[in-house]
Amino acid sequence: MPGLYRIYAQPAASILSATSGFIRQAGFTHSLTPARNCTFACTYCYVPTMRIYGGLKTEDWQRWGQFTTFKENAPALLARAVKPHMLIYCSPLVDPYQPAESEQQLMPHLLEVLLHRPPAVFTIQTRGPLILRDLPLLQELHRRTSLRISFSITTDNDALRRLYEPHCAPISQRLATIERLHSAGLAVHATLAPLLPCDPIRLLDAVLRVTAEPVVGDPLHLRETKRHGATTREQAFRIADHHAHREWFQPEFQARIVEQMKQHAARRGRRFAVGPEGFRWLTFSTNSE
Ligand code: SF4
Image (cartoon, rainbow, N blue to C red; front, side):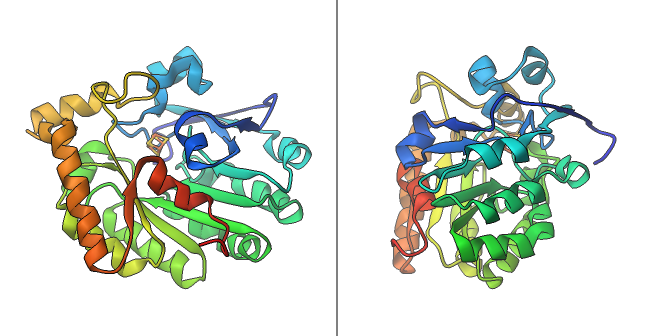
């Protein structure tokens, strides 16, 4: 995808933020955001709806995904700010393995810092198979602290995936990435969030086959049920209207799907939960379950 986006780099004033809202309810103390604006450009992305509250500038939410601005001094800032008691989520505002990271290569430097100054928990939220580039560093970090990887898969249907997240990797490649991370000994969760139109049982079975950790999920956020804060981007609603998927944006339908998935996971002796209940699993230290 090089050429579809521009990459900028600027010094930032800080790199770790105290958490609030959803991520705080899940138990994280801090978030780490290595760049502003995300070149995956998902049509439903919540971040641009947060505007200045997501630390964005006007051009970020107006041209979401067309460029990204890396925090060029992030490793130096992190070395000064990280503390052993922190439970860090990376990141609520950008995918740390977004397409532009393949050129910028900031994450290896951040992981090197964490190897020398490990926090209590470090959780990487991504959908990027690029994470495999850093596998040796991740394995070393896993030995030194509680490292969790939350890997997003949003549907089992690649035609639907292309409608809603055309710049993300195909589903088969994402499943293969999870399998590779799992077989490398890392604690990897499949995160079915947001739940796009799919066959929910087929999706759940696919991720149960390649993981051992509990499965995390979340339906698309809606103003009807969440009055404030981040919500689904308008572009996703237009796609849903055009392709007759609007039931996936209705609270009662979402609740029925989630219940079916919970029951299906339980029948297989596994756990599936949504919202802060599910995301809380991402804060557990490797020995606390
Ligand atoms: S990967 Fe995450 S942060 Fe990036 S555009 Fe998609 S939903 Fe937004």
